[in-house]
Image (tube, rainbow, N blue to C red):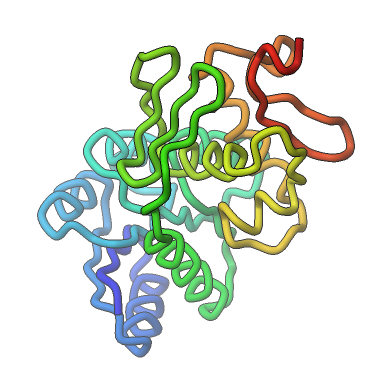
Length: 229
């Protein structure tokens, strides 16, 4: 059972989702607007948020950005918008997953189970040091050359997956499976967006990498700068 906040202005979709989720023993709170969603999220502290983007008062992407400023709760975007710029914008803003309407209720339930599993992954592992990069899995903290780096949950999980295989090339298929618990299939976009944001925070780019090196057609390798010489 999980506490779920459903942000959806369509009453029919809202009712059907609430019924389906409650049948699976979830406790569901609802909000029909963006501002109501923010207030409810702060008050009820949900474990998962299902967020529609087409809200009547505030655009869902703005709601996501504001929610991320106060909470690291997993957010699954549910929307009829299926264009690449919107999907990328949602992932950039901190969404953990993206489901396009119309969708099957079992599909949504499976995505919820996936983000809940990710939230219970053990993190009692030793600190990992890669050059000037230090990753503490237990505290979920990262420093670069002694300076703290603020990462989203997904960015941290992605970095940890790569750092755990320091020097090895990790395929995007593996990253999608381990970090997002998703089968491969159009997943390049999800991995690439988060890699782009992670690179920015590490002070590098794909064209001028320091730690994150793309091996074209194979995957990504995290290595010390000097090791790449």
